[in-house]
Image (cartoon, rainbow, N blue to C red; front, side, top):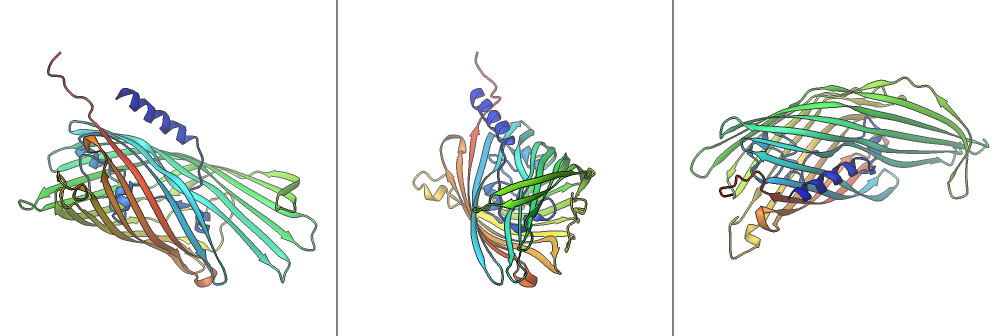
Amino acid sequence: MTKRFFIIVFILFSVITTAQERTSSPYSFYGIGLNTFRGTVENKSMGGLGIFSDSIHVNLQNPAALGRLRLTTYTVGVSNSTVNMKSDTESSTVSTASLDYLAVGIPTGKLGFAFGLVPYSSVGYNITDIDEDAGVGSRFSGKGGLNSVFLSAGYALTPNLSLGAEASYNFGNIQNKSIFLQDDVQFGSREINRSDLSGFTYKIGLDYERMLGEDLQFKLGTHYTPGTDLKAENQMELATLLLGAEGQEITVDTRDVTVPDSDFSLPSSLSVGAGIGKPKKWFLGAEFVTSEAGDYSNRAFAIEGASFEQASKYRIGGYYIPEYNSLTSYFNRIVYRGGLRMEETGLHLNGESINEFGIAFGLGLPAGRMLTNINLGFEYGQRGTTSSGLIQENFFNAMISLSLNDRWFIKRRFE
């Protein structure tokens, strides 16, 4: 048990130092990139619903749910995303794979703890724009994003009510590069901007449940994240260059430009959800999340044509288990999940609101002792629009996670 614990910790801190591109969306250029879903495959398979909590899964969205955890749980999730991007004139398809989260949940009676690593945002795009009539070409690319190392705790005040809190340290960097070329000019120009970000965020949560009858259970969950500032150390490099025959960059001259450091204002957010169900049989719930507008105007360079307003998310989903303790049929013990979501991202470009929707389905597969399970999830969705010269993205996400359970802190009856 102890050996396995230290292996998990080693992997956790090894992954912290590993960079990965989790997106290929041009919309990740704006702000601090695309906000990454902070939840498990189990949650995402229910449309992102985070209000459901039980005794064998770590809830990464609401720290109060840790008060209901009864088994030590190691969980890790990975995904692959295939995105088709199209404009009025052309289209392309790209795929990315990523580690989505790594966490450990530890119950100690009424008090439960969790720690781990989850992405906060991601940046990754590569766009080429050629105007043959004007003889001008541009290439824009970006990478990076933020990661969060978190420590959370939840305490069961009563059998019905749990409260929780979480602290996260966010860190990472965002790099943007632009190259401009013109037919009648020998050299091109390149501009590289980088912002190294760091800072803390905090969250408080509440988890409530009660039986409405012999078989019907009501659940309520809410969590709030106050607005906070991240420190940004900004850098800029200007260069004169030539492009080789295969597109390689041949630098002729470079110059560092002094850019003042700044703050990124992360917006506050509030989530409220409720649902009903029969324990260990079925559940159906809905959730609403609202976030204030973020202040992303203080990047190392100016962002034109974009504004940020209040964002909203609407989620509905649930699960069904034919017979959780069936001894004759494995398929009756499988958890069948589904859900859908609608999201107003708060990003406005060229007078258009950038919205997103997704529909998801998933399976929870029993995989051994102590209720260990493998979770599969699939989501199809759409982001953006082709109006006003923008890009529409159709994406398909395939996800898998392992929730490995163990029992710690067992009081010995005999020596």
